[in-house]
Amino acid sequence: MKKAIVSFLISAFFIYLAVRGVDFNAVIAGIDDIGGGYVLLFLLLMVLMQAMRIWRWGLILAPLAELGKLELFAVASVGFFAIAALPVRLGELVRPYLVSRGKTVKMSAALGTIFVERFLDGITVLALAFLALYFAPLPAWLLQANFVFLGINIALLVVVIFAVFCRARFDSLLNLIVRRLPATWAAALERLCCHFLDGLQVIGDGSRLLQTILLSLLIWFCDALAIYCLFLAFHLTLPPVAALVIMVILIVGIAIPAAPGFIGNWHYFCVLGLSLYGIDKAEALAFAVVYHFLAVGLTIVIGLIFLPQLKYSFTELRQAVKKTS
Image (cartoon, rainbow, N blue to C red; front, side):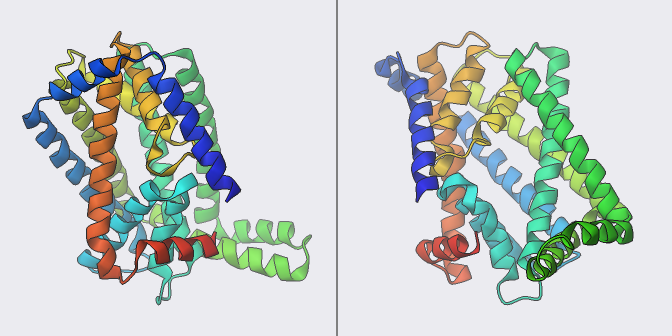
């Protein structure tokens, strides 16, 4: 409950920053002037992006469990919906929970696949951020954030490579660490870590790993292209690299745990990114509102379509995930 209250307060703070001093008549006028053809193209790119994300997760999950295409699409779509619908990113637990339900896959192993997915996203977005730097200057705070994330990802990469390719040595080191704990805790933590590492198996499969890396590049390129299409819908004369910059800034922004649907932080960081290109705050907020409504709304609609197939209501799913968190 406390986490939920804090998340709503964070969202309220960002909403205040996003709307402060804005002429709402100008916001409405900006939304009214939107080009419908580019909006349709944006939605098609969002659907393509989601399909590629599901395909990639299926490749990461394959060493643990081979799901049918429809089941994979249903589980992943409901999982993406839950990320948007539950506070403080509790929705990240939904896919592992659904995959482990009634199967031989342990939830901790399924969580390992989410870690791989997020790690690939982090590396890809960092690479795109430094590519954007070549074409356009980035604000100092974003550069600092990128270097911090780069350091974290390099450290994680070293640990993951050691854990996957030197598993026996890693297990020995883990055993040395956990033996200092009470016996019950030590055994439980060791099992948890071992199952989690099982979810990283795709890293040791060169062919699958290459496919996931290529898909990661395509996913985020598709996202940047969708943002650019929305620029055109709003008649914004911005260079294509601006879409990349907005994407990177937005990813940093929505990483902050907030209320369901990224309300507030999505809008503020969108406005902040567009301000770098001299876009009026009212026009930037109109863009942020429409972008959020379309992107998050599409994810929620697709998830709700597949939720009955998994024989869950949203309330049941939320309660189940809370028990596992």
